[in-house]
Length: 377
Image (cartoon, rainbow, N blue to C red; front, side):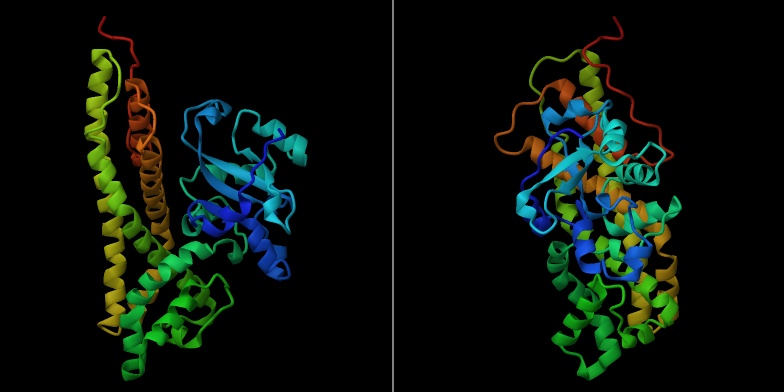
């Protein structure tokens, strides 16, 4: 492994979003004494299982580390001192050019080792949100302990008011005249808790969830609350990008075919961004309808059945929101105040990358732009 350092670990641990950071060091601190953590680790290699996994926006000087073009990579940070993050850490990128050689040299792991395969599965994802991550791992035969799929403290704090507002109809249904603001706060804290053993019998009874289904049901409910909150957070930025792609002007001359390609990509990307926003919103309205059946019709069975079937939708929800978050974040980074001018070639690459991320699994990939070569010549 090359001698790379990462210094802002303490700040990152406190401020990063759930979708960006999987803090395995924190999971180890909180759960290393539990049987579930010991018996069902995420990684077999102890050092990796105490690392920080980050979805990282690549800087210009990092692009050459990869064979293909990409803007987001999966960074693995290994703390120098697990008791003091201010000491910093060393890092590498999953699937960078020297990835297999580094894994063998640093950990003695070959390309077929389960930990290497798992790192590549994680690298395929557009974000690290726990609901998308769990479904990716389950589809590929991995079932690590529930403690690996929590929401970051930073996001929980930001979500709390939203969740309290969302669950107030259920609190009113359950407690009637005895419902208070404090009641909603307590229930919100229970739902958002990262402790899989943090049960509340009254909630299980209200949702008609037997003990063996309680943890799964509440995890799925938390997933929909997380996605609904995430959509509210990202939607204004995504819509701004959808408008901005039609206005951004590259600097410098471009061959006619490249100009035509950019014009086409602008329209196509804007359409895909709006379609992704509508798709996520439509899926979340299905959740709203099921939740309404519980709170307005007092039908817990319909809501329970919906929750237990929910993981099938987490894949598309998580992937679409993850790509929208990437697009909005990268657009703000690349076109914010003081950023350098953009060439037609770079703009075409960015538009194509965004469009490819939003393409459905059965959609054809966007056609690569022709560069400055006039194919009609």
